[in-house]
Image (cartoon, rainbow over all chains, first blue to last red; front, side, top):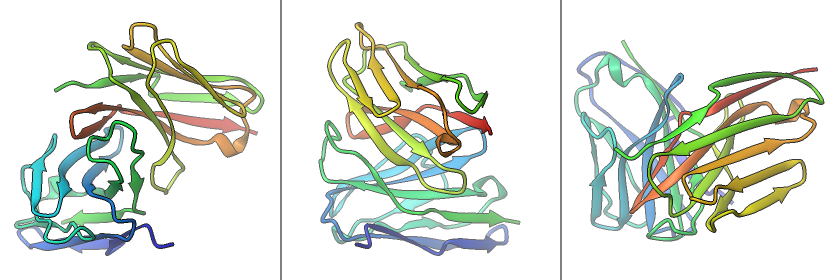
Length: 115
Length: 109
């Protein structure tokens, strides 16, 4: 019963470094997404995917890249980390494409600090 | 973008008191979802409302969807310390689920 698995749980980067946050789900969900959560800001959508090979931008996509080569995995890449990207990142998935009836299942989050 | 606004941002209550959080939109919503996030945890889905004027209950929690489908509320009767956390509403716009800023509930025992 793994659900949505995110790695790493914690990461400290220096400005300009690159890294990838991993997300995997074992529920055969077509839809996957990445959110960032900052204090007092709620959850903001970064990128999402409605299926393998298809990705699209959310509310705050700048500075982040994604790819979806398989149904199970949806990695989030930071090519050149900036202090403004210090945040908690959540991956989420659901079983319906249109989100009309699907609840999002969230991973436990990845806390990223950029110095 | 099309956002949902939540009020209040914070709420302190004494254990046993009631609590309500409101979610408002300037545009008509196709549906509204509610999530709860415990301190240090991840958001967990509570419920989805779809129909105009819909009211759903989960034990001490009552969820309402406005007649015009532009607002929603979550009411907790007789709060308990286990209700502590942040409650978010979320709107579905195409393939994007966008969240309100959340209401953080703190309960004094």
